[in-house]
Amino acid sequence: MKKKHGEESLIWAECAAEAALSKKATNVLVIKVKPTLAIVDYFVIATADNLLHLKAVAEKVEEALREEYRIKPIGREGVDSTSWVLLDYGDIVVHIFVSAARDFYDLEALFNDAEVIAYPSV
View 1 (cartoon, one colour):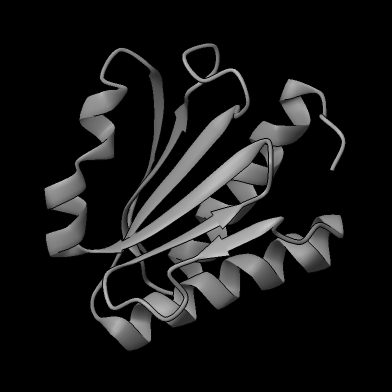
View 2: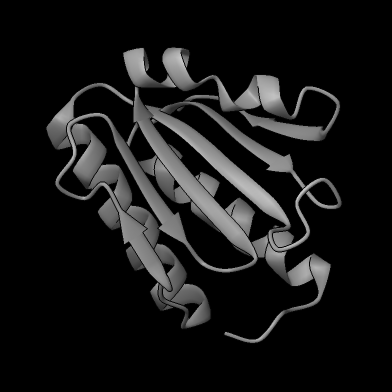
């Protein structure tokens, strides 16, 4: 996947965040991780209630980005996991956790000085 202009990756990140919210994910954040990470512009982080919810949120994010922007993840990790799904779109990476895993990995703490956009829960 070619590297896109920064504004386009923000639009993709916001689309992913809104898709997660539409499936009732909570504590949804978009974190600008560039320039800390040279190969990724934004992380989208969301919390799901349980395994079924985790999978539904991941599917909705993939569907929204595919339908709106015709992009597919270049990597998918944890789709058989019970705690964390990662969708890698190159410029953005979407992390969907169940609550205990999100607390344990605490990705937000790694980027505590980064720009954060919080999305209110629906």
